[in-house]
Image (cartoon, rainbow, N blue to C red):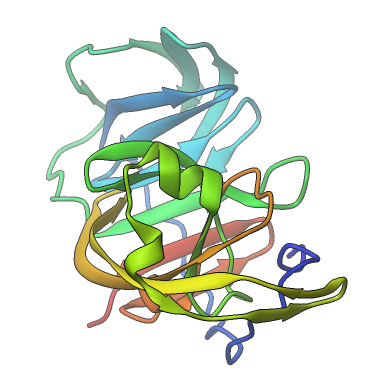
Length: 216
């Protein structure tokens, strides 16, 4: 896993690493497009996939903003955006986990919603808090200056920061309220989903996949 943004020295304890066995796919539902990736609900689990991703017995061959082509047990199928679920078994469950495939940049990209507003994000187990830039906070309409001043020491010196609480933060099927966050006066290409969100879930990693699931 690639380290946190080089400017940040926010740290946390290492995430628990366990190995979850692959599960045969039962149904596949379109969840949304994110550039060259799509969110699919596979066997009741929300997973972010790109061409070449493999989830159990399901292999993704092609991804566009409007459809995805995949193969299950040697049979190719196509699912269009907004299309009805494609059944490849039975007994689908409500989403209880989110599985992410590492990107070419070795980061785990995901789409996050802050108070209902969408932002590109990265799951970062090295960040102690959900982290936003001032520009991101401004685009979300957050009044970060009312937060608690929190200077942060970086490799390039101290930068201004403000601690606050997000009324609502959703990542995949997980929608939490009152999440601690920090807004930094620096450039960030994406929101960092840090430990103030992740600690409420079990985080497991296997090869190039990361899974967030509810604690048993």
